[in-house]
Image (tube, rainbow, N blue to C red; front, side, top):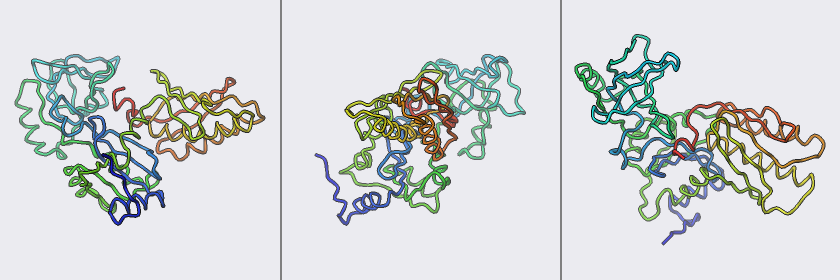
Length: 351
């Protein structure tokens, strides 16, 4: 049975929801979603950003995860790819990973057959190999020097240690970035994370959510919001909608009038501006990067393209990453480029 929250109630959650509704305060929520521990950034009730922090704790014993340390054997050196290929896992189930030269310290000159201590940076997905780094700050790893010394006297590939749960760097970055994040508080229902956050963050309240009758995810509809952020279709308030399609080279977004029955240049202009606002939000939420093409509804009104382009350029100034609307082609396609800082949301959840 669902439980309704009375925002006028004297409960902590009732007050928090009422305050958020009134002020549009930003909030970081950290909980599990689709076997991942995720950071959700909400402001004014809208999900603006969602980041996987790693495998959920209950999955930590299955497979390998970002942050794990390995003693890996160099199987091949590719000067063309500027990378080494390494065998990791165990001798009986050796898997092949990718180690870019840029992730190898200058004092190392690995050769085929050498054993290296490496850290998993990206799990294998969609036909891509796991990616590793040999640049390891042992002082930041519990028992780091002991692990390093033990590895120096070993001659078998193996996992050296398991990461300490979710990577909290995105959370720390969000707290520190006052320009793009307005955070009233951080809330998590994971006790271990609460302790780590409380110890590592000052100046921003951190709260442990303990209501067992209503989950943190249900209270803020995070499963619905997260699923919508990965969906192909996004509805607009007016009845129009966006369609997202992905290729290796680019992301294509199609604007459709949908259920709307009005017509005329003024109507099309309003629809395209509404779509532009949602596109700008979705680009950040989905963490799209590289070439992004947006097919807006055709508008023959004078200066319509120039006006829409200027509007999108202004919207993109609020993005946390560098993003720019470059042009609108003769076919009415807007060209947008955005800097890549991490995997897209779709890639994080291996869709």
